Length: 478
Image (cartoon, rainbow, N blue to C red):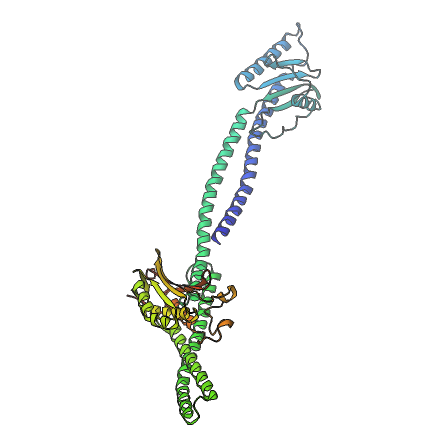
């Protein structure tokens, strides 16, 4: 979620900065050009005032007129030398009154001609189009020279734009630097904002995972984040409290019912045995009743064991998994041998963080299940391994195995494969195993064992719970 929310915020902030920066850059360019245009208008107005009384071509007799023309020419030459701007005053018939440089004349077409033609209409030429830093264009400004209400000549300036374009580019670089700095600040703010918003979500996700794996005492710390997420955290804690209460009631009911039914059932089985003594030996009805009664007793024992496993508090400590697994292999070897199954183990020493009693019970259930469903003459293997974070006990058999659909259901309460209904069992053994392992942070997984059979992997952590992690109530490190 963080990787999706952060880019979205960055894109939105970049769009906002561009929406502000682009108009600012355009406005800066327009302001720089307008400043140059205003200067050129002032210059053309000054030259028009000087040329106002120099209205006729050169006349040797008109000495005063020639003197004014020479003054205008010197002004234009000085203007060109200082600023590098071509300027000239041209009569209506295109002949020059004065111009600088000397080789510059009024062209027959182009922007200069258009500005000249517009000024002949007794108005200043329109402002030139915007010149951008990548365009090598000049700015042309023309103003009419009016005498007695008539346009007698036109002052034209043709300005290079190199310096103006440089100033625009520099201004744009300043804007870009400001945009980049603002973007960095925006990214930092986005990181803080997404962290502030998503931190409660991450805590909620971790707590949900803890509860899903059996740590029902885990709760969300209602602190930080938006008010909506704080309310969600409080609602989640209330829901977790209610769920835990319902589960506790359910476990208590199962445990109490199993315990209360055991005594009447034991008495009933005893009376059935006494009754069997009064009947002919080999009576099938009595044998069937006794078998069903014993099966019901096993179911009640397993129900009580499941309730205790889900309610018990594990006592975790550093345990030699290899030695524990080797001990269980040795304990089950006679049972496997009596069934004609070969039980072997590869159990090198390796330590893990586990409850020895709970793990022993879990391994007993898994090995019992493997031996029970393995045909005579086949092998059950128990292998212990470890990596950096976990230790595992893998039990593989060469029995009939399970289908893909059955693998998704194995471990469910009271579930048994339809192909194994004739095998003794209540369908609760692997459920008890999962409860015992989950209480200590372990897990159990099922997979196919090629070419046929089942592969069961029991995994326990190699280290204790990290500081600050939610612990099951009553769990102690030893």
